[in-house]
Image (tube, rainbow, N blue to C red; front, side):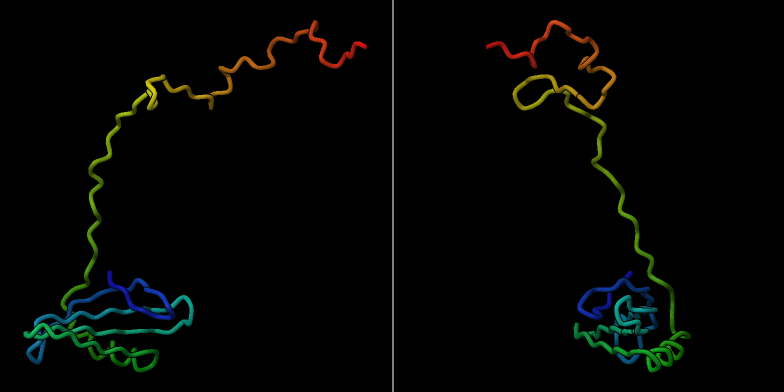
Length: 129
C-alpha cells in the first residue's frame, strides 16, 4: 500500500507493479480512488532508472482515468502489504510496585466493606456547646 500526497496529507492508495520499459528498473503505479478532502481521482506513476534517478508522473480526474486505463494492460500484480508479526508481547505481570509493596486492585467493588455496617453511636451532626 502506497501513499499519495493530496490536500495537505498523505492518503493511502492501492499500489501496482508495472512492466518496466525505456531503460527503467522499477515502475510502480499508485491509485487513489477518491481523496477524502477534495474528491479527486489521482494516479501517480513512479519510475526508477538504472542511474537511480526517480521520475514521477501525476494525473488527476479525467486525465487520470485515461492514464490508468492505458496502463492497466502493463500491470504485473498488486502490492499487498504484509502484516507485521506481533512478537515480544508476553503474559508476565508483576504484582509488586517499585517500592516492593504488593499491588492492590480496588476495581472489584464487591470486596470493599465501605458502608456495610451502620454506626448509630457516631455523633457527627450533634454539636455540643
